[in-house]
Length: 87
Image 1 (cartoon, rainbow, N blue to C red):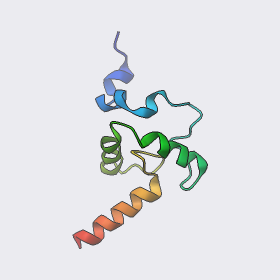
Image 2 (image 1 turned 90 degrees about the horizontal axis):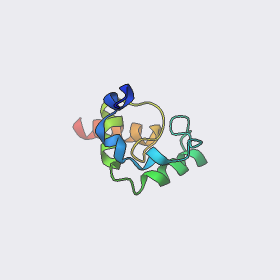
Image 3 (image 1 turned 60 degrees about the horizontal axis):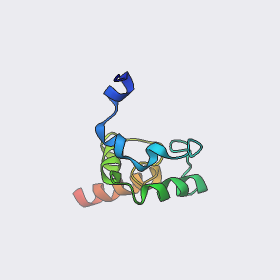
């Protein structure tokens, strides 16, 4: 039986390395530079959908948590660099 969550979740989520990660890892609450953020990023390193996850976070302007191996500081730095290149 298909659940509502399965219908809403992007298909790439089923391939994410974090899908089976310890629920104690704070993907959304991980403060940049913290051990929790480093733990999340370590899980992302070998994730087969890391790039898709990162692109999703950037295009949907995610403000919190670790996505595709980047925390909010990393994503903001990338946005600033992109803006400087475009200018």
